[in-house]
Length: 131
Figure 1 (tube, rainbow, N blue to C red):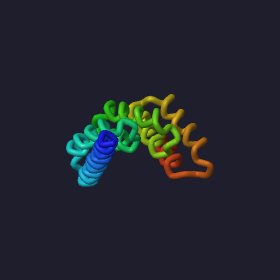
Figure 2: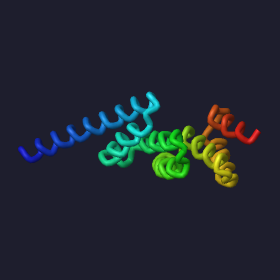
Figure 3: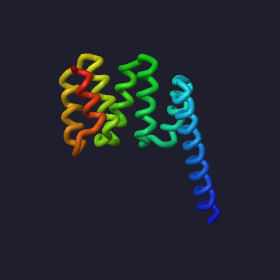
Figure 4: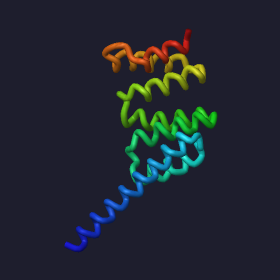
């Protein structure tokens, strides 16, 4: 019985730390302190490795630091978790366009055409890059 109680306490404590790491990362990101955001997000994914939001924010942080290839790495991880995320398809399409990867750019437009049952900003903004 005590073993179960200890396990439950550890589980809840781990989740509390994890939430604090993500919240701290968001605060740092919003304050444009991308390096600190990255530090907190790297800790967050240790506790919550399936957090697509953490990988997306890691990608955005690296993209804001002009590290596009690292951003793509984190966006790709998030994409394996949530391929239906319209924001993520936009981010991957935008970075593909910026890197001159036109086949991938077109693929993300196609994804968004499927995901958006009606017109959506992500699709319109991604198409606007080529105009």
